[in-house]
Image (cartoon, rainbow, N blue to C red; front, side, top):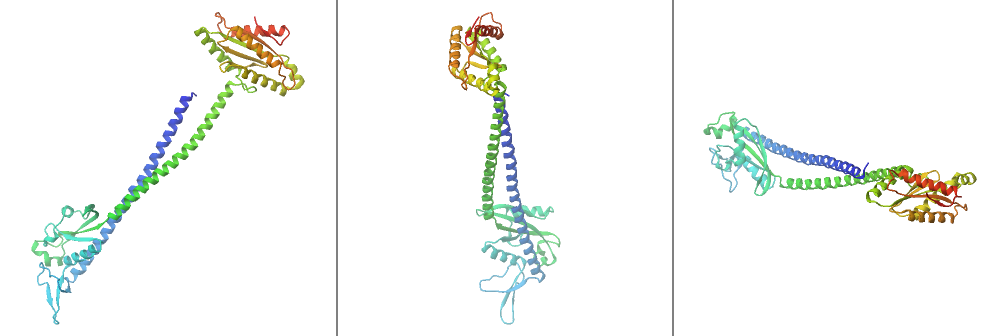
Length: 407
């Protein structure tokens, strides 16, 4: 597989994993954040309903007794909307009547001073101007007239976020004591009670929680992707190393580590085409180890293999980086020399012959015979050049070996 194509596959693979993990984790953490907000919002509704139901029960208790009387302390005002709100006992004390509306207002004032919550009883046609509805309440009251049973939401009041809830109040028999003049009948929706409480602290904690979730999500995603990149990189390296090893095995001789015959001939053909196109010189040398069968028979194949490796290493170190060298078969080697004329090839062959002869291998005196040939314009293929070099090799062997031959 070409390296560029392989790299593209790896990049696509890593990008796909990255996007998948990022989307999945983003979805998970986004879902957590949204669900947290929903739960808190639902808790606010439950809290508001609980407060509403509590004040409704308290009002019913009050209304059930027709209102309650409390001692009229200094500064306490009687309700101007009640008929004969005050009574005087035989001991001279004055008591004033607190109906459900007054009681609701006073409980709200106590709670508001403590920073807990606020009640507001209101209607579209309030008896008391102080009970005039605000925008949220007016909208809710109109919804109640169409049959809706509750309204809620969050809004900013005096620079702080508040949760608001409102539910309708239906006219009961004891309500007519104060509201009969307004034309209400039993069962009519005469108004509602709104509940509001500060959720600024909750909102701030939600923001902090959201930031923490984002940080945790980014950290988790980064760590996970880092681990995936690390292990993927290791896997890619192993695959790449294995591929390179396979490619190397496909073009090299297993014993000597130089090019095998198949790759050697392929490169030779490439160089011949280039030489023809550019009108360059091209030469080759065929080298054969003299009496190699005798070395194997006398010293064993392991020693014979070592002789092959030693000669391959020596020649590899003696040639140029762009020269092409490989095992042609058995004890024969082929050296392809780009941009090298016949005389230059002959001189190199002689140097190689002398160097091998003067350096015994495992105390064994080894000699080689070499045949050389150069490209002719009439050559149609590498076989033509190799045949001439092969003929030169046989000529060298027939003349006593340990020499360079040519035809």
